[in-house]
Structures are given as structure tokens and as C-alpha cells.
Image (cartoon, rainbow, N blue to C red):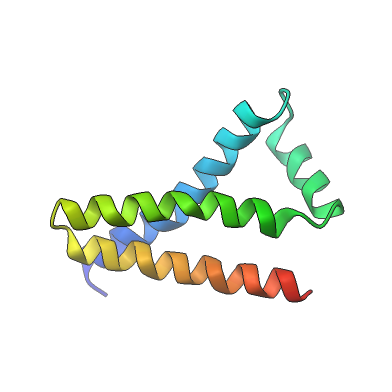
Length: 93
């Protein structure tokens, strides 16, 4: 794999995780991220939150395209497909 594609994949994987932590910090009333994760799993809503967290990749993808970093944009897109596969698996379980 190309170095830029790998960098894009890493960015695409880390950004939704960071978005989840921002969601927990500002979207809930001071809940612990791990505790919130367990609550979401118990309510069977983890796939919903994961889907919303992955939306940050849309912004990253277009930013990479706008700045002519096409290889990194491919990596972000690949990471988004990985997340999509995980979300489909979670919805089917």
C-alpha cells in the first residue's frame, strides 16, 4: 500500500473514534466514554452512534479532495467502507 493511502486509512479510522469522544463529552451530561459505550451496547444503539461518528469521514474525504490529496482521500474512503461493513454486521446481530 502507498504511504499516503495508509495515512488516509489511519485518519479515517481514528477520526470517528475522536468524534465519538467529542459526542460523549458534549452530547451527554459528563458521562464516562467507556460507561456510555456499555450503555449504548445494552440499548443496542451502538450502530446508530457509530454511523453518526463516521460522518466526520465525509468532511475529511472532501477536504482531502479539495487540497489535491487524492491518495489520502482513497484511504479515508477505504476506512469508511470498513466502518460500513462493521455497521452492517452490528445491525444484523
